[in-house]
Image (cartoon, rainbow, N blue to C red; front, side):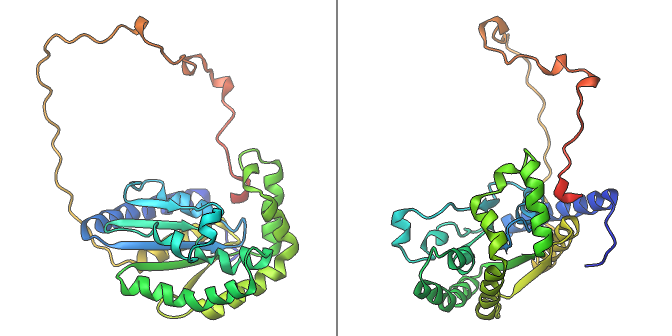
Length: 279
């Protein structure tokens, strides 16, 4: 990426334009019955969650939804590894955004010892076959790797220590990743050797600058899906019928939420939260 920073005005204008295109894409997905899977992987604090948030902000959650699975249960650990992901794959007219995916096995599970060496090798062998099956089935599969330097990752981790809005995002596993940078790097390189293959290549997003990363990633996503404009049926609001004498229930009989908003003054305004990682 270049050194030049995006101004906030330019960033927000372009993001709004791209978000409008995402809504157009959504309408095509719904009308055409397309099935789309988008995978977000990368280092902890690389900006995956922020990108997903901007992508889904104006989308219909019945069409476009985020899959972020917790640690597997004891029962799931005895299943075929890909089994619990299969049930979250899209039906016709759906988009699934995987915030972390089956690639956990090639990353955190490999590095932290949550899987055996045999399970890791089996994953690397099966994963390209599994993904080819999805594509052969007609699913559009896009894989994004958010790349960030160790210096930038540590900077973001440190900002989270004092940011109450993001403190929850700093887990013990995240902290330990700082001391295992090279282990994760080797695991990622090995993963790419086996899974960066046709027809499911990885798309690497340079994520040192989160704003640029979001613009670049969303632009690539839109360019990778062959969507077309779909005319929406015109909606005409009907006229209200004449009243029949209905009276609303008296407020004195209801439990009303206190009107805190009316008690606010201009002096109470503390400003909009600015994510320090976006600075």
